[in-house]
Length: 379
Image (tube, rainbow, N blue to C red; front, side, top):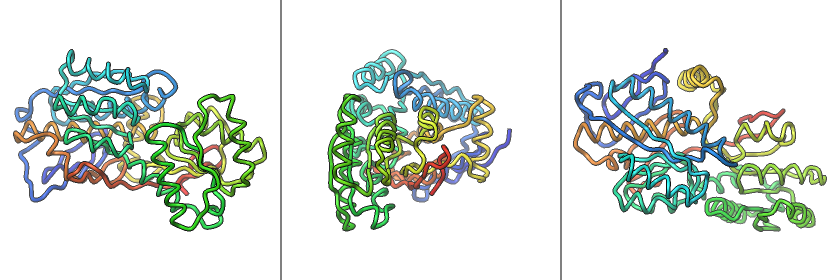
């Protein structure tokens, strides 16, 4: 299997997948991470939505985590175990999963969850227990604010909303209708989008929540149509976004449709074939078609291992797992606190450059995608 170098502090690691992590923190130097005797057994947990409507996200993320674990075990020649638990994208189930991992499985740290509502449900418990919780994809700003054991490597909700607003041209901003799902992160994205549009001189003609009942979708879209928007922005999970866009097109609403990263999912293209063309999506950095050696090798190894191509959620799972394992290894080796090995660090991985500041907020690049011919194309 092909290998490329990974740098941790001043130390070079070779990782099978070829993802490159560069951790920078002051002038820190480190002992040899390949010393088998330098690190004790590591046991981590992962709470992900593995069943239910959001299972496609969780399964892709789980595969990425699994690949990272295999690569790390090979490199460290060190026992590293993981226990997966299903949250069903439900806060109560997430709490049950967390309690099992901490009380029964005695894990040292936890990856997850993927959604803000479930992550926020367990974050105070992790903080109280002194267990690191690192979410690969939850975006709510309140997550890292919970305490010094709680981390996210995903762009914040407000930054995603601002990014899309900055991506629209003046004509598109002339009359904007905004529909959002009544969830913490999706509301935060929508609020940031609205503020950024207005700051740029655009006009928001409608700003309303999406009904829970699908039977009410037509009435909300008729309300949107009455405002004659130039752009419809939707901040919601994958299926509500896709259904509303398809409905709008069927109603003859010839406008710009824009949304957030939850639609950046191959399952949406499979479930709504050729019906989402033209949609703009703010997404995290990961282009599996990228010709860079790092991503090409990851895609090749992932496809060989799982007989499918990776998604962005696979890449985030990989990065989250490898970042966490690296911090735990260095902590055990140096006698430092694992949370200190995350704060103030810069990681360069599959999903681009991630800078975790000392307050655990992050700086992370996003990119704009457009659906063309039933494919996600970087705009």
